[in-house]
Image 1 (cartoon, one colour):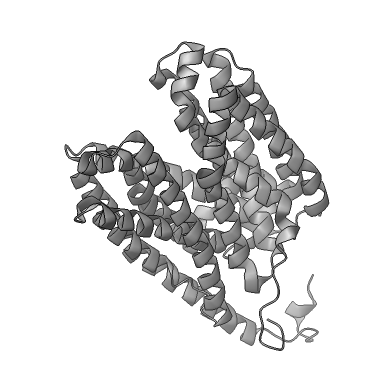
Image 2 (cartoon, helix red, strand yellow):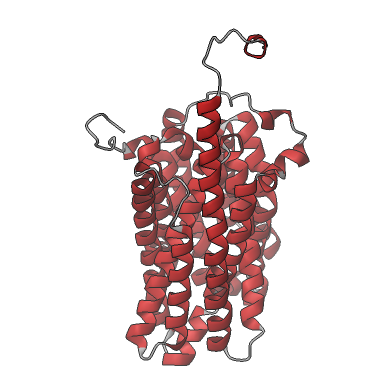
Length: 422
């Protein structure tokens, strides 16, 4: 922090290239859903068969991300980012020329691989280059732009598909990605990664190293539980609201915009509150339990709140909590173990997908979607809030231990035998 007590200015344009990519990744993640009927009809397959393209993207990302995050930690952000960006453009161009299901699935798998290479590198790049005082805001703005892909990018893609066919939406993604490359070349440095203990580990040990870090291990477990409640229940949000209030498909589409807007607001709010907490010396991320409590309140209100107004208020609270939680977790991944930034970020995504699958299965096991959302969504959210207290307390103890070690360390240049050793 500056001597005047003011936080340093946040240079948003420094991250224009990676912010463009995050917006495109967010659009890509949610775009296939509204295009699915058109895709299935055009390539003459069932909608469930066409949905395998979504499964291919998610599975490849979830499996490959920790390994590609390790690659970013070892070869540097610039190489991983550029490789992932070029592959993302190629994958979307391939989807645009797909005439059958096989090539479409392959293209979506390649897109998942590309996002798994570039995504963790982006979050690590922001975390290690943004000033500490504004790191939360930088990460929050990145996540807000990712969420804006659902609010702005998906409707634009759907409109383009309506006018020029579904392939045009993927072609637009390919062109937009290619246009971001010059910005990345200018704004992401090619500095080699620092020599850290992680460099000496074998590949498997390095990929699993985040699970050996006490705070990160707890955070990843909390992440799994939180997203089982959050995105697992979200899988059935459309069904829940249609059953409760007889909403049309068009109305549910507007709810999707509300979901994205809530995520944007939560991301920006989480980044700002996190920065303020750290500026006040509270480096243990005290907000993680708060997001869990808000998620429990939002899912409960959506499930049983009387009237559609309260139910939609519940949806808003739900996704404000979701956006804020993700930013706190990304900040933790970027600071708790600096030599594992990209690997830790990748594990956050992988455990998010794992939690989503488990939560969706659990909600689907209930005969009534409202009951499933209430029990699984609110129940697991409360469990995640309690578990998040252990993460916060662990980070607080780690900070205290680090400060004590620093105070007890011999002064530089001390004449002890230990200090003289290389």
